Image 1: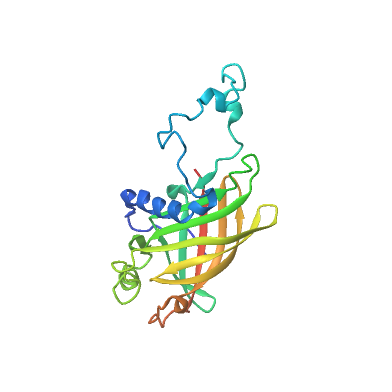
Image 2 (image 1 turned 135 degrees about the horizontal axis):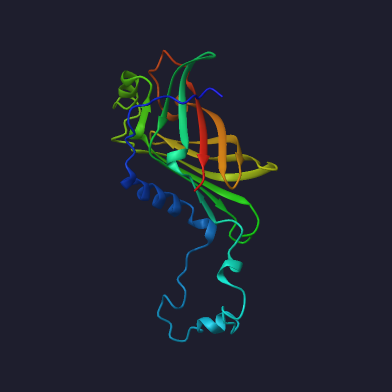
Length: 231
């Protein structure tokens, strides 16, 4: 594990932007849950069946309780930013020169809604606020966030949306999806360990694949470590 806790500058996490990131991910992932057609009650259909009829005439008080009806797992697992990190490193060969992390991100894992009692991961979505990047070197942070490199003014978000998730064994998964950085989208694959409590993953991103260059002191391959604790 290359990433070690570092006393970064005070967090600049803007919690006001988390709903924006979450909305973008939910809209991207709508196909997982169907077309989202309105129900007859939402359309004002006066002929819609009463709730009692839809429930087979069973009164909740006479049957199972709401607690009994709850699925074993929530349909969406959402990362707790305060106890999670998405970290990157600048390295040359096998030597890690600098490290950094993103303070503002939204990480969601979707479970199969048709199997609420089974832990079946079907989709993953990540949204990262690029300007929330901090590193252990203030000058490096400024260079990375300049208009000549990541340019967060023009490209404020980096995203990842899975296209395929394969359960290889137990809690191990092979994840494939589309990563968008600096306005460029490429396919990325990585292995991850996913449980109800957390997600752990390590991967390499080549900055050249996303139209980035000019960091000659570092390798083009940037290690990324993801450690997410779910709410």
